[in-house]
Image (cartoon, rainbow, N blue to C red; front, side, top):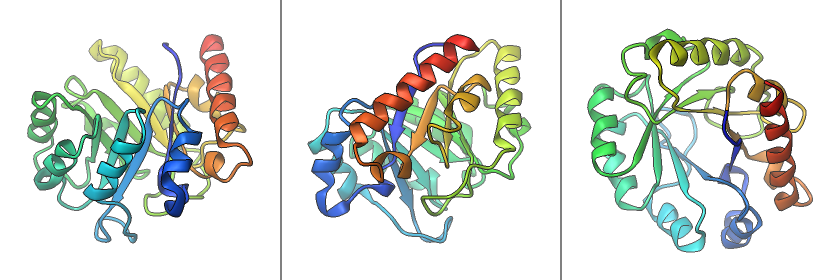
Length: 223
């Protein structure tokens, strides 16, 4: 496994000081950008203008997670705004293969997201196409939730599927990640970790990112 990548979620950042908070996570590998439309989830967050502001404010690549009911129709908005990676939910995308390959043709990394109740087996026919698979380890909608333990079994299943297909997409986990469980999650197969509250609610977000990267890489070497 390659180096472990951290993707702090600005869902937990201070929107009144977004540039300052982005500066604090300049050592991260991605900025995780949660888009919620108030339909697919029970919350409303960021749109295109905020993404453009993020791109103006940091050189860290942006990983845009679209928790929206119509991703097939709206992915180009976020590609146009500069997202480096866009992930769409299996549960919401009617034309998943078309949407993923369209993004890739545009030069954007494309991934698929699974909610906690969605089994990994649904990816059998698409795993050869994706650049990243994101497993939700909480039910999407709000930050600060606790990690769902069943995610570990799903990670093992996903890793086995990738090995069967001879592919190695990035495997991202989002929800309840902290220094207490990052080693277990990495050993199960994840190599991109989203952390919101653990980073931005800490006394020193930059140090927390560095700590999580260190713990993750140590775990990867042991796996």
